[in-house]
Each structure stands twice: as structure tokens, then as C-alpha cells.
Image (cartoon, rainbow, N blue to C red):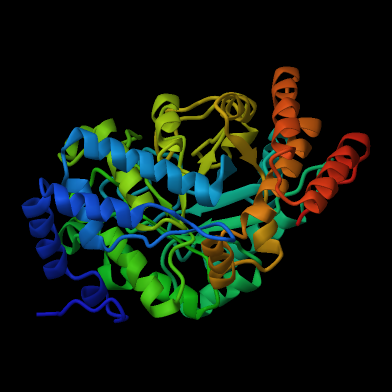
Amino acid sequence: MAKYDPKSLKAEEFINDGEIQETLAYAEQNKNNVELIDQILEKARPQKTETGYVCAGLTHREASVLLACEIPEKIEKMYEIAEEIKLAFYGNRIVIFAPLYLSNYCVNGCVYCPYHMKNKHIPRKKLTQEEVKAEVIALQDMGHKRLAIEAGEDPKNNPIEYILDCIKTIYSVHHKNGDIRRVNVNIAATTVENYRKLKEAGIGTYILFQETYHKQSYLELHPTGPKHDYDYHTEAMDRAMEGGIDDVGLGVLFGLEMYKYEFAGLIMHAEHLEAVHGVGPHTISVPRLKRADDIDPDEFDNGIDDEIFAKITACIRLAVPYTGMIISTRESEEVRSKLLRLGISQVSGGSRTSVGGYTEAERPHDTEQFDVSDQRTLDEVVCWLMENGHIPSFCTACYREGRTGDRFMSLCKSGQILNCCHPNALMTLSEYLEDYASDKTKEVGYKMVEEELKRIPKEKVREIAEQNIQDIKNSNRRDFRF
């Protein structure tokens, strides 16, 4: 039987079923242990230093105890500390992005995804480079600067060369004042050589959802196709880092397996990346299983309600304090609003989850990967964020200034990242307000910018940011960054 070893490169050892089962038993035994819970909560709380804040984070066992705890006042304390951590490291900024679906051709048999090979009535589509360009222009006209590209796994229709061509096309499109400045990539597990090619193409974060860490469930949920190989899929992040990609994004699809098992596996994966590579996940996504063509989420009996979902989000924030946390338009405005307070730092806006969806006048549903619950426009999402005290950020500066991987984490952990991120957020928000915003959003936005400029602690930084924002308003100069 495999032994648990977070430094191992073997999936069965760093995501070890025996360790997870022991963790869940330990959490169940201690879910009412108030003294232990208080100790864990105190460990998680951010500590003020001369330069900012530091956080100890939590082990998978400690975090699992909190997730198992059902004591209302302790859950409220978790939420309170999660918000403290979020504000300490990310402030009130929320990064904005959009998914771009390139192709829904897929050779896998994933039973929870409408793109599975046996689905014969979904129209199959793959964007040409001209169509990619048209999609990018449509996204630029909305105001987006950051994309996450998605494609089904199909070596014939979606080879790595096709993905690389699409990335090159996306970066080449300069429409009016629009530019896509960061392309994150969410494609199937691949080879070290292909990860090197993605790195050379200038991608931001490589994202791959594990779907489920429970190996037996994984094999049943992925009965056919290359994705059936649990070990190859689970070890993908190590190959990506070997290929030079130092920003990787984790995630599970909550609702496929028991959430406590998934949570423990997710935190163990983050611990593994830290132990082996010296840097944890750049992002963690928290998608829930949703209805789609050919897929009925009610057929899966592991669904989680909104309260459990909120607790999972808060516990991830406590356990992995420095990671970016992503929530998509799978979730409703109400759910997203609550989770923004509990640790979420990135949201999608104006998303369409169909191939070629952004150039369609009406939202197409026949090729959607999942139902979009939040169907507001990007402008509506931006205005909503600001009205709720969040700064919508279109910033991509860290990636383009080389502040990635351990360099980003060292700045984040010392609190120094705030000196870059806050003014960068305000400058990119000003670009959006000037180029794309409705009158109402523009009015709300510039009031926020004016107030937030006062909060920049360094006078010299504040003066430069103010001058740059004036230049944005009075000229076509764009892309200022610290």
C-alpha cells in the first residue's frame, strides 16, 4: 500500500487515499473540540508585520477539522478570518476575466460534461483563426484584458499546434484601445515538451481541474479516453512546472464526490506543490456541477448547498492564504456576492461558455459547456462590484513584469504586492471607465478611483498613479503599470 509523501511525484503518494481517510476520521472526531478549533482559527489569522501581513496557513488536517465543524459561532469566526485574510493580501480588488471556448471536439467520455464523445446531438465546432480574431475583438469591445482559453481534448482537432496558433492570434489583435494582455490556458493534461511550448507562447497560468481526487470515482466518471488515466492527470502540474510554467491553477468540480474528501485532496495538492516546487497554486477554482446539454446534475448525489459551498470557500482561504481564488458565472449573483467576502479574488464577467458565443447577438445554448447562472453584462458586473465596495481590476502587470511563481509569492507573503496591485487596479479600471463603461458605471467608477487613490500609502506612488490616470482620461495612452 502506498504511503503518504507530499514530496513524492507519484499521485498515489502525494494524494494518498489512506491519509485522506485518516484525515476525515480525525476531523469527525474533533469537529466539536472547541479548544482545538480555537487554536486552528488563531493559527490561521493574519499577523501584522512591519511590511504588511503574514499568514501561517493550515495543514489539510487542520483545515478539515474546520470544514467538519458545525458550531455556528465558530463558522462565523471562520468567515470573519477568511475576510481578514482576503483583505490583507488582496485588498478590496477583484480581478476580471472571461473564458474563451476554442473547440468542443473531445475524445473523452466524461459523464458530467456535454462535450463527451458519445453526445451525438451537440453541434461540434472549432474556431478558425479568423473566428478567434472575431471573438477577441468582441471581448475587447466589452473591455476584457485577460482570457482563459478552453478546448476539449482531441489530438486530431485540437493538437497543441492549434492551441499555440490561437494564443498567437489572441495576442496579435489590437482593436481600438483593446488588447488581451494575459492568456491563461485550461486544456487537458499534456507532456513536459508541450508545457514548454505553452510557456514560450507567453501564457499566464496553466489551469487544470482535477474534477475529483477520489481515484475510484475518477475512473468511473472518466470511463474512456486519455483523461481516464488518473495518475497522468493528477501529476500534470508537476510536468507543467518542469516545463517552466511557474503559475498553475487547481480546482475540483464540487458535486461529483463527497466534498470533504475533495477538500482534503485539494489542500494536499497545494501542500505537494509547495513541498516540491517551493510555490503553491497561483489560483484555486471552486466550480460546482451545473446543468448542461445531456447533463442533469440531479443524477449526481453529492451536490452541495450554498451554505456548505460558502464554508468550503472560507476554509480554502484559511488553508492557502496566498492563492488567488476564482468563481465563475456558473454561480448566481447572490452566491458570488457572499463568496467575494470569504476569499474570492477573481470573477468572470459577461461570460459565454459556447464555442463562438461572443460574436452571436443572442446567447447561444446549443454548444454551452454549462448553464451560466449570472448572465449580466461585463459593465453590469463591474458596476455591481464597485457598488459593493470592490475594485474591479483588469491588471496583468505581475505576469508581464516577471512577478510569477516564487517571485509573486514572496511579494505576496511579505505584503509588498499591495504597493503594485492597488495602483495598477485603479489605472486599469480607469482604462475601462474611459473606453467601455456606461455613463452610470463611469460615474460610480471615478468616485471610487478618487477615494481609493487616497489610500495608496506611498506618496510618490500615489502621485504617479494620479498622473497616469489623468493621461488615460486626456489621451489614448494606455497600459501604465508598476
